[in-house]
Amino acid sequence: MDYLNRGTEKYTTKYWVEKDKSAEFPSEFLTSISELGLTSVLLPEEFGGPGMSISDYVKLVRQVSGLHGVAGGDLLMAHNTFGIFPLVSIGSREQKEEYLPKLGSNKIIPSIAITEPNAGSDTLNISTRAVKSSGEYILSGRKIWITMAHLSNLMLVLARTSNEHTRTTKGLSLFLVDPKVHKNIRISRIDDIALRCLGSCEVFFDDIELPESSLLGKEGEGWKALTPVLNLERLSTASMAVGASDLIMRETIDYAVKRKLFGKSLGSNQAVQFPLAQGKIASEASWRLIRDGAAKHDRGEDYVLEANAGAYLAANSAFQIADHAMQVFGGMAFAVDMGIEMHWRNLRLFRVGPVSEQMALSLISRHILGMPPSF
Ligand SMILES: Cc1cc2nc3c(=O)[nH]c(=O)nc-3n(C[C@H](O)[C@H](O)[C@H](O)COP(=O)(O)OP(=O)(O)OC[C@H]3O[C@@H](n4cnc5c(N)ncnc54)[C@H](O)[C@@H]3O)c2cc1C
Image 1 (tube, rainbow, N blue to C red):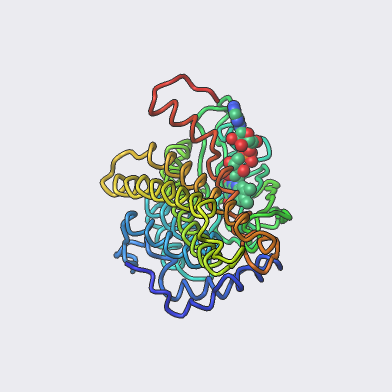
Image 2 (tube, rainbow, N blue to C red):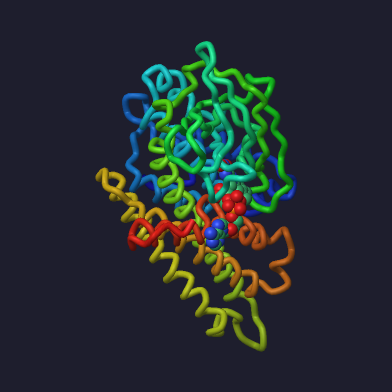
C-alpha cells in the first residue's frame, strides 16, 4: 500500500512548526490519518482491518514520516505498534473484542509506559509493582518520559508482579490501563525538546486498583511478551528516522540548489554535496536492514540484529543529515519557522531512545557476537 496523501497535503512543515511551538497535540492530523485507515493498518481482517504485513507497514511509516516528519510517523506507530500489535499477539478474546474495533479511531490514544527514573537502559531494574489482592491488582510506582500519557486512554504498563530480585526477566507483567478512569494516577508534562506537540510525561501510580482483566498476557511473562513489541518499535522508529531523513534531505537540496553564493549555487560545492551523499548511503543501508528485519518478522524469524543495527544506523545517519542541514541552511537554520531545527531536535532523540546507541551496540556484541554482557 502506498501512502497517497489524500487530503493530508495541508499538514506541511508550517503546520508541524506551529504545533511544535505551541506544544499542542496535532488532533486534526490524527483525525485525517485515522479516516484514511492508517492508524489501523495492522488490524487483522477478522476485526475489519487490512491485516498489513510488517514489510508493508515499515514502508508506510517511512512514507508518512517522509511527508510529515517524526511526530506524524509517531502517531502511526502509537496506534499500530503499541496499541494493535500487542493486543493481537497476546490479548485475550475479550480484550481483543473490547479494544481492537476502537483502536484505529482518533478516540483512542495509546501509550507505552516502561521507562522509570532509575530504569531507562537498565529496564529490568523497574520498581513499579502490581500486587495481587482480593482478585485485583494494586499498581504503584512511577514512570517517566511517557509520550502522550496526558492524553492517553490506553496505556501499556510494565510492572513487577513478583518479589523476585531485581534485574531478572522473570516476574514482570504487562497491564492495560486507562488513565482517564483512575483518580490516583497523576500525570505531569515535561517541558522537553523532542516531539513537543505530542508531549512526554511523568506518571505516578498511587495504589491504582486494576481488575484482573487488565493483565495482558500471562502473569510473570511480561518480558517475553514485551520483547516483540520492543523489536517492532525499533523497526518503526528506524523507519521514521529514514522517512524524516528523506524529508530533510529534500528540503536541504532544494535550498542548497536555489541559494546563490559567490556567483554560483551553494549546492554545487562538494563540501555541501558529499555529506548529503554519505547520509544517503548510510540511510539507505539502514533501510535494507529495516526491510530485512521486517521480512524476517513476517516469516516468523528472529530479527534482533536487524532491529538493533537498523535502529542504530538509521538514527545515526538521520542525525548526521539533520546536522548537515543545519550547516547548509546557515543562519536560516536558526529561524524556528524554517523547521530545520525542529527536525534536528526530533531526530536527536533516536540516538537515545527507544534504544540508545550504546544499548544497541551492547545487544549486538552480546547476542550476535557472543561476547559477555557489558551492561
Ligand atoms: C522524548 C522522549 C520520549 C520518550 N518516550 C517514551 C515512552 O513513550 N515510553 C517509555 O517507556 N519511554 C520513553 N522514553 C524513554 C527512553 O526510552 C529512554 O530515555 C531511553 O531508553 C534511555 O534511558 P534513560 O533516559 O534512562 O538513560 P540512561 O539509562 O540513564 O542512560 C544514559 C546514557 O548512558 C548510556 N549508558 C548507559 N549505560 C552505559 C554503559 N554501561 N556504558 C556506556 N554508556 C552507557 C546510555 O546509552 C545513554 O546514552 C522517551 C524518552 C524521550 C527523551
